[in-house]
Length: 151
Image (cartoon, rainbow, N blue to C red; front, side, top):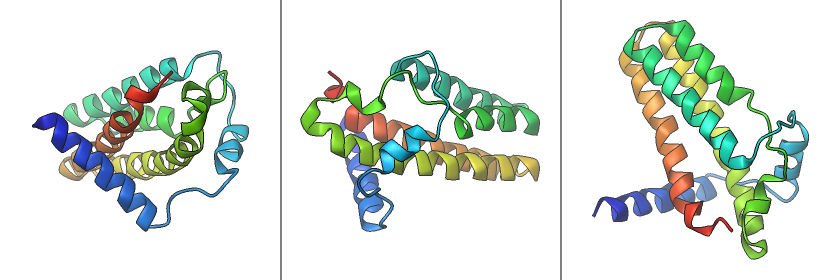
């Protein structure tokens, strides 16, 4: 049942993104990646770094350490692109949709990371925790939509 609820949440989030006009138009994913530093790591390794950054933010909230929250968020906000085109991990017929997700979720990650940092700076730990939960929900939603399609 939990798996079903997660899939429904992911689909609901994707529909909300589409309905809200957040989804990118053609070329936006290429522009997003072109504006980033390239790292000598795979997309999977990049996601591991991002997960660690989220964990640092969580620990910062638990320890009531705004600098730790900010340091974790900075990793997310300034993350590099992997050494390859990120959409190359998907089958060719799914790459256009994955590009839309990359741009859409990148915006959500930035929004929720910034909100978490702002709340932590004000020492509003409940709000910081709620914003971090929204960040983690965005991560999990994207992963649940795409993890079974990676080639």
